[in-house]
Length: 336
Image 1 (cartoon, rainbow, N blue to C red):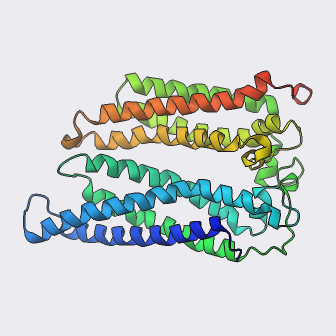
Image 2: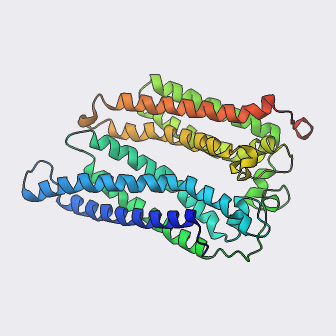
Image 3: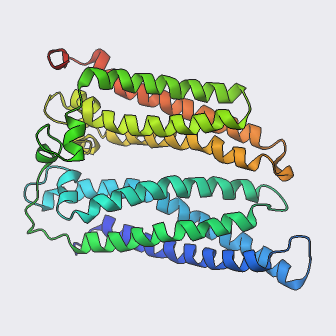
């Protein structure tokens, strides 16, 4: 295994987080069996004290699991000079294909962990903590993801050897081939530009509608629009966004954007993308909590903040995408 600070931080953080999540899931089973908020006996008081302490610790663990996606991407890009044939994080991932599965696990952890974090934050603001039982039981679903994250990460990093000759992004994200990456790179530029801005318009419109209109249905449509925006934006990064930043019609890699040659533009770009996606999912979560009397009058203000954040992140994404298209010297007119 390569002893890199990023690798050690990821593995150590994953071990600590998994330990905390396992403890929280164990408490969740105990709470599901013995939790009686209407009683004030010794067992109930002990569970209440323990639940607050464990929930706070688990919140930090979930926060690390969510943010570890960024650290993982940074570590991949920082490791690529060690491998022959690698020019970016793509080469590091190709050095051990397990890394591609790990990347999707980390993305799922980011979304699921962030939603749990929001739930716990809301629950701790209410004196009687009505979400204590469901939030700890939800850790039983989050725990397998965290376990898979740690196992795959250990297998992936243990399989990395500097002697490995890997392939660069030019061979993976090219128009020739039959994989998913090749198909994304082969998507036509003009239709993808139209699709990206059309989906962004729909997503932004739903964020505005939900800011002024109530109702379960609107939040469901917003969540679907957020997922559609996330998938379309990821495909657009490969199809045309990266091309305009690289100024090379044949260069479609989504990871070179994380490098200093391109002013690390990938970090704010992906933060805006995944942040906007998360902001589009949170109102659906809050809609599930509205029937609870304890949250009466509190969710509107919280939801408005998430909707406003989603609009700002979407605007940031549009600025980052539109700038090279509108003001850059490079053009793809000959390929449209």
